[in-house]
Amino acid sequence: MSSATGAKRIARLTSKLAKVFHRRVKEAGLERSIKRFYRSSEQIIRNRGTIFGITVLTISIIALAISRLYFIFQAFDYTPSLPMLFFSLTLPALVGLIPVLPGGLGTVDATILSVFLLFGVPFQVAISVTLIERAITLVFSTIVGAGAISYLGIKQGNARISRAKRRR
Image (cartoon, rainbow, N blue to C red; front, side, top):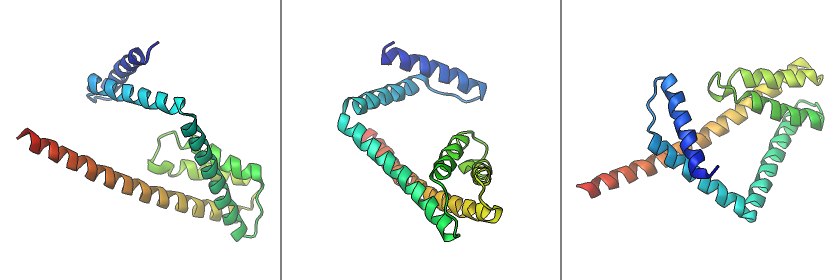
């Protein structure tokens, strides 16, 4: 199946799904966005340097997250195992994909806490580490997200204004 055919099928399916939720979706605009996504993905896949860079960046981010969690545990005089640290980062990320509340509030926290308790971490340490970890991740991701939205919103808003001025 070509990317154009795939984009049309995905656009039609998304449009039908949107009607279930009483939302209007312009199939042509959606199809353009999907085609643009396909083109960008193909460019990334063809460029081995980009793939290598993305892989290194991903591994670095995971290593930093594991280190952050390790140091939080160390602050409570508890030495965690590497499998527990890895598992406590991956399982909550998967659970966080289930949209319940913004930021996975509640579900992700309970999952992190459960992983810690399953690995035998004392309850008070598990609660404390979970609260600190979630505070760090939520605060920083909220700041970064707000900054990105602010920047992109201003950028897109200015583009709309300049297009409107050109039409006059």
